[in-house]
Each structure stands twice: as C-alpha cells, then as structure tokens.
View 1: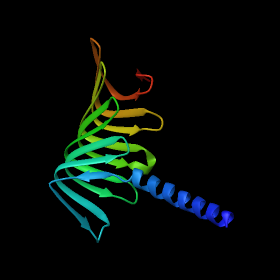
View 2: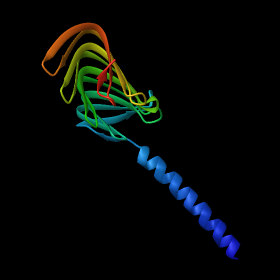
View 3: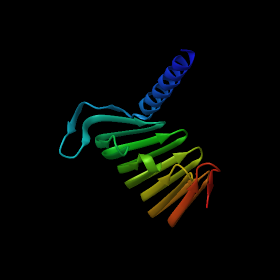
View 4: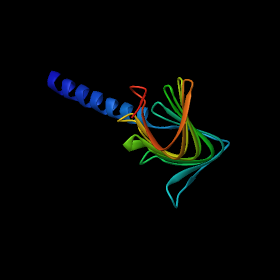
Length: 160
C-alpha cells in the first residue's frame, strides 16, 4: 500500500512540475485586437502590441506570434528590451527557441553610455553578441564614429 501511494505521489509531482514548466514558458500576449489565424497557426495582434517571452518584452503596432516555435514578427515601431538592453527599430523577428532576434530598419541600440544606430542588427542572447550592419554610427561616452559593421558584447560591455 505504501509503495502504491509513493508511486502515485511521484507520478503526481512529475506531472505537476511538467505542467508548471510549460506554463512558465508560455508567452504573455496583449493587444487592442487579437485573433488566432487557423490557416497559419499564428496569433495576429494589432494595436498596442505587448509580447513577453521569458524575460524579453517586445512592443509593436502589429505582430504575429507562433506559440509552437516561440517566434514573434513585429512591425510598425517595435521595441525589444531585456535587462539593460534596449533596441528600437521598424521590424523584428524573434526566434524564441534560438534566443535570437533579427532587427531591421532604423535600429537604435542603447545600453549605459553606448548608442549604436544601424540599418540592421542580429542579436544572440546565448552569446550576448549584437552584430550591427549598414550605416553604423557609434557613440560611446564623448566619442562618435562610423563603421560598416560593429559587434558588441553586452555581457562585457565591449565593442569587438
């Protein structure tokens, strides 16, 4: 009898922790208008879009979200924040399962005393590297300069 109770308890705890882990990974999605497109399998959001995946927050005028792949496509003035990182641009494609975002169109990155403006940025949360390309303008402290591309390590706060 004790063995059956123990096995039942272990199964219950395993099931509960599995369900809790899935619930914690589920994005928070808000917008003025939200609907699920059964043809594409995507949530379509319009107006004051707010998507939170883990500790990343994306805001936009319009967005599409895949719950299965944790991907977000945002446009019409997006912001992407996580910790002390702030990115503003025209469009973003977040690859949630890859911890990666591709941002393009008037990219403006800010952290502490650094600003990087570029046409495009590719940011990897695993490596903490942001690669900026196209008309790159960098301002760090009192210094400003231009470059074809720039790579910034957010963890060490250094340009590579």
